[in-house]
Length: 138
Image 1 (tube, helix red, strand yellow):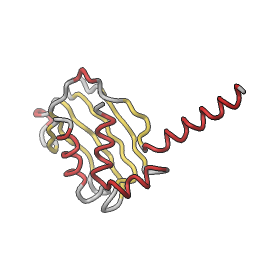
Image 2 (cartoon, helix red, strand yellow; image 1 turned 180 degrees about the vertical axis):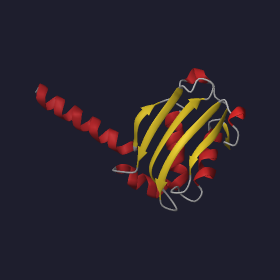
Image 3 (cartoon, one colour; image 1 turned 90 degrees about the vertical axis):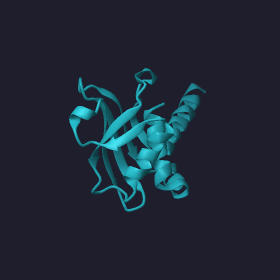
Image 4 (tube, helix red, strand yellow; image 1 turned 135 degrees about the horizontal axis):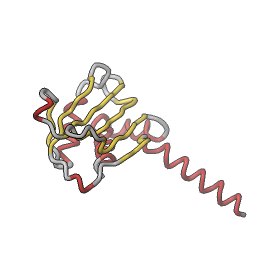
């Protein structure tokens, strides 16, 4: 009986992990109270409207964002690496750092796989960025 329950518990855990697409999650502490971030990363392999979708997702969390131009103006930088096609994200990594100390405040990885593929067909790019930002800034 113990083995059966252990197997069922492991199966449920495995299916839950595959359904979200978010892995290696280290959420930003709620005590950080971040109101503005600078964005830094390559958009060469990203979907066409990725920056717009990302800034909308951040705005929904009451965080303003701008592309990083000058390090002196940014207290917090959200580094990203995104790969996908013109419409959706296939893989992404995000890391929020405090510029003064270079300390990582939170990070996550994302892969479009499992149940996430079906969800993305419904919600599109904006739904993907909303999921990632909501997970990072819980």
